[in-house]
Image 1 (tube, rainbow, N blue to C red):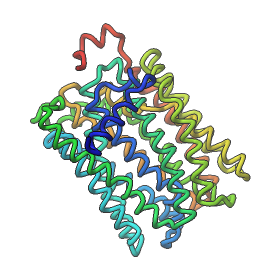
Image 2 (image 1 turned 45 degrees about the horizontal axis):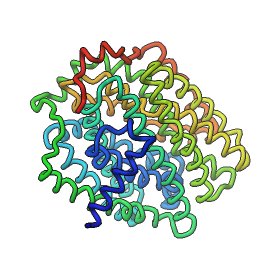
Image 3 (image 1 turned 120 degrees about the horizontal axis):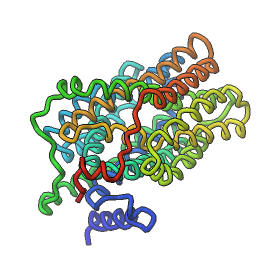
Length: 424
């Protein structure tokens, strides 16, 4: 039996264990969505404890640290809408393969960047590649899963992301501390290479197995979708933009706050992994709450606790206090498992999903790319502590946006049956 077949059987057995059996729709999604998401998030998570320090190493100040961390998010955001069009036109298989290949090649090139400008451009293009992956992934799951089950499935995907973010910082922190910061980028590419080979071989063989994805309408236009759904995007943006600001700002605030109190790279990695461990234990109950009580029951507490947590960071002066506050931030973020994807999936018109998701994630991406930049600029002009307070206030704005402007999108079972066909 070949290595590819053995790996395929192992992945299916793991993700269809008793605890996960009712959370994954079919084998195709396991192998082309959940497993790749797991590996990709590990690779992304490896950079969290080292990226701000690496930017400092190549000569970047606080303002460039925020911009350097945001480069990935800027590329991701700008390419979200084109990625929606490409996913719709060329399909999931081609885009996921190209996305992984882009990440491998540019991760190898990044540690050889001789200046900040070249580093920024490489990270920007990697973000474009991730946009192709994320849009195709979300469209695929939304087309497969009924509305009254999406909270659980997408929260499960969020949980898989968090498991990757638990493992990734551990690996990245240890490599950065005991080898070099540059070596983390090379290790990131090495982790993605087997995934690229596996997914390419599987897609080639899946043609023989005649596995296909649900198709969206081919002639829909991106700009028309944005115009038609602008009120939905605007109302959702009042909450999603500030939520993504506070989430992305953690990638700068936590590592920099750790360096202020003298923590090493591997200690930073362990603390971030611990916070991710808290997050990844929550995706099952959070998905259940979203599908039974409503989306706001988890989104609003998520924003409030994130706001409190980042506002407490300036008060940490020891490893213990820093760890406790980071755990609180992790718990708060865990309450929002799948919030962005679930709300977008609920709001998306059935015949415009690919392009709507491109626009929806673009809206969230505006917040995501803004977070590190806001932290860097405020910290450079004032102090890192004041930057933490500013981000905390933005978190409260996110809670208000969910409460006052975003409608509850969970439908009753009877309503769902009227508007969504039963998944395969």
